[in-house]
Image (cartoon, rainbow over all chains, first blue to last red; front, side, top):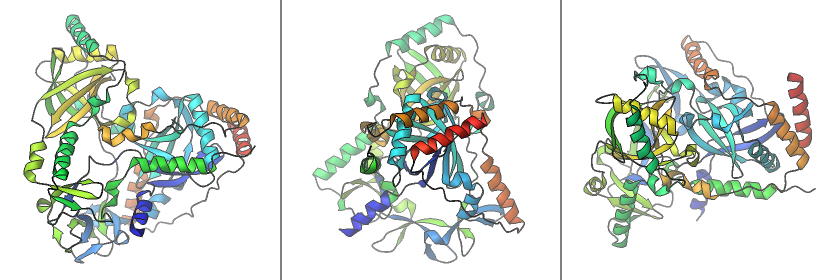
Length: 275
Length: 252
């Protein structure tokens, strides 16, 4: 089925592609997400059970719009907009729009999870596997995160790049002023508390402390209940419809496994050099 | 702001949740290029070509090649029981939790009496462990991490297991193709670029540039676009590393 083939290619479109620079070592890379957007696979469906397509519509033109018919606008007055083109945004910081340049290496513990917004994985482009492998090895040994800045769509991101299990993970970081301080919220300043009460809390926490992470504690129980219900209905062939060959909203259907497979292949095809 | 009661092993502390995030990105509207007016999002039934109102759309669960329709009653039956309890079931060392799990941080403030809250803040700061908590907020079930951040109690919602797990099973480490000499030079270059991460020293200048661009265009100024420079990928790793080291040395 050629349609399916095409669909898979589209699904693997990176969120960004450009150059990773480490000193004067430059390599082409692509950036892919590592988490599925949204929760579960609940979709909006029409009267006959088929998934609905999300589309953009123009009231004045009375027509559906394609990507090229849509442009970003910034409201400067009542209903008055300044149009901003992609190329103009890119031109605001051309270096960082195309290059992720590692400009310092910091201890991993300096990157607090509170600052981490999203995690992506870097995949080496053509002929870039040897340089990629070298960076993976050197950064793992140094136990440091590389800090860089780059522009993704309409936002300049601060990122921390870490070497993990043979891949370079890229975490977009929140700017310091995007995390509100306790003072801004108006929380009272911590004061010395009742020692007995602190002891009681520490003891209760201590009893619940384990050496391993029980991942079942992280399981979303609502998704579990949903899956049970779906399984039951599937076995009874109740309200089951066929999914169209081409998903009208394929962006919702992203599989992280595809990305890791892609990374594995791009590393294996040219990862080893003679000599 | 949402009020709840934190509970574990006989401990109960009333808390208020405040979002710790403030979005500073410049927000744009999507416009129709031709009509310069905001676009409307519609749901299109591709079989009939009809638009479906958001309220009238059904819900379906995709499983492979099938989609299972779920009624409003069935979905309502899946909703969690409303509750104010934030139950902490276990505490673990922070190293056990990958940053990828975490989603949105909330500061915890005191509710009905500060004594318990001060004790909680002190205990979390002393133990430096993360409590795995579960609660229902606005009809949605959450899993989160309870921790101390800057001396204050914080609760960070976590992505569910199905959203992130798949990556961890894949170990792609393979150093066989990496040359010793290149690795040594790369390590040296990293060492020359060592520093500490100070979030306060990075400002989002791009944000200002975007607003400035808007201002210039508003005044009718045309914006000249520079030609993008192409960066050629390096083929001789050792030579590039050598030049990088020389460059860093000159800078120091």
